[in-house]
Structures are given as C-alpha cells and as structure tokens.
Length: 400
Image 1: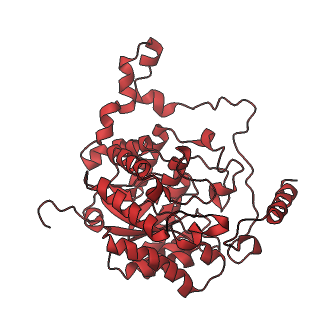
Image 2: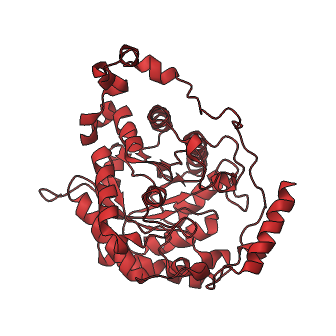
Image 3: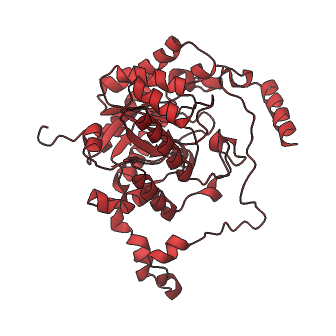
C-alpha cells in the first residue's frame, strides 16, 4: 500500500477491523428541511450541498468509517416518479453526492461507498435488462468518480438485489448488499439464509440488512443470513444498518406499515444507550460492519463507536464532548442530576413516553401487496385525486 493510502473496505474487514457505518440521510435531512417525505429523493446533494456536507462531517466526527454517497433513490425512474419534478438530472445529483462524500471522507480515514437502491421499474415489472440499465447508469458515475466500494442497499425482493449486485460486480470494486427484510425473509418469502446465499453467489463480498426494522430484529436476521452462508460452504463479511426506532410490533413489511410512519415515529426513537447495546450484540454475532439507517443521527453513531472503542483502539473525535456513560453530568449544577453520572443508571433506565393515553404498540397496516400488484404499479404522472380517493377508501375499509 502506498504511503498515506487508506486501507480498502475488504482489507479492513479481512484484518478483523470494525467498520462503523453512517446514519440515515433521508430522514435526517427531511427533519432539517432538505428532503421531501414521500419521494425521499436526494436532490439536496445538488440543491443544498452545504447541508449534505455538514451531515457527512457530523457522522465523520461521530466515528463513521464510511461516507455513503447521498444517492438513495437517485435512479432516474424514481426521481421522476408520480409527478416529482427536478431542477437537476440524475447524473448531476449522483456526481454531486460523490464529490461531497469524497471531500469529507478525505478529512479523515473514511472510505466512500456509492449506493444503488430498489427501483420503481422493478415494482412495475420491467424486464431484468431494463432494471439493470437503471443500475448501470448510476454505477457509471460511481466508477467515474472512483468511489472505494459499492453498496446495493434497501431491497425488499432478493431478485432485484441480485440484479444490482451483478451490475456492481462488473466494475471490479468490492460490493456490499443489504436487504430491508426481517426474519420472515423477503416479500416473496425467500428466507434470510437463502437470500444471503443468492447475494454471495451473485458476487457480494459483504451481505446483511438495512432499514425497516429495529436493531434487535436486524441482528437476528443477519445471524440467520450468516448461518445460511456458512451452511452453503460460502464465505462473506456481514453488515447491519437498522432503524433507530423500536419496532417489536412490525410485520414482514417493517416500519412503513406502522400507522406512525413517517411523521409520528419519534416516541419510538432509540436512546444512545439502546444503540450501545445494539453495537455489542452485533459485534458478538460476528457482524463487523455496523451502522444505522433511518432515524440514526450522529449521536447514535457516536454511541456505536464508544461501545466498541476498546476493540477499535480509539474513540471518535465527537467523544470530546461526551462523558462515558454520562460522566459529563458530574459537572451539572443539580445534585440529583449529578447522581445520574453512572452506567448502572442509564443501562437500566426504562424511559417514559410522557403520553398517558397512547398505546405502547400499534396495529400495522397489512395490505399484502408486492411486485406485480396493481396498487404498486408506478407512473410518471402525479397521483390523481381519483387514485387517492380509492386508496383512502381502501385504508378506511381495512381499519374497520
């Protein structure tokens, strides 16, 4: 390795290092006023680069080893879906996202990962060649910008993830693949173990899950993937990037079926101590790429890095402003708050919601539709009032 060069993702994982991922850009930037909930597309990379750059910097300071390009849902068919109009082309958005991630990664020892996500084209039953062409258009930008590795991220159907991996593998760069599934498997009922085997055979070096479920569920699912890969006599590294929300009441579709999605999820948010527990459980399960997805803010990533500081050999820069297990509270003016400056207090706390009339669990929607169903066929035109009325009527009927 040349002097000053960074170790690649596989060198780090092959050497037993822990790789800390980053957090959920679309949710974080939506709350900051730079992403529209609904399409969840990343045009902010071109429209408001200062906001994306700052969030990258906060994750880097919190301990992230990887700056993922803000290219979630940046395929042309998604950028133009259901009447969503853009001032920038998909190529411009992808290029801007790569430049921002590289700029910040080079401020530390972080790597840049280019990511492609599931497409409206697949849900609308476009052909394998058509869907792969969508992936290739994004991937060509990542190759031109020389990202360090590639991630096929956020797939509900393993078939589409396989197609993405095959396109990414053709670049010769390391490939990671994560599905947004739980223990029940993908939306066609393919088990986590079988999903992982298929992804490894397609060419993925790193496999796992992201989004849709909480850390406990995601770690359980990755363990099932690991068992499947090992049973098949294959080898891979494993990654986990869950939600920062508690989701014990979710069905196979995950948190998007919860009635609180997406604007009422805050009562479910993980504490930093919940995240430390997740970091330890993931590490003990043999997962070495550990990060977060929707809901994960920089302080959550810092909690991951702090929990695994002994194994990694260092703390992140952001820990300068955070005492271990609340130690900074020793300087508080109120004595009862100073009494909370200890691990056993925070580790055993059962946080109250402050909402006496609210249930602790919800009843998820369960429409049971997936690829090929008429309700999931996508369109360039804006959703019509007639289409909305039909959905409202169906939702009211399902509730009763």
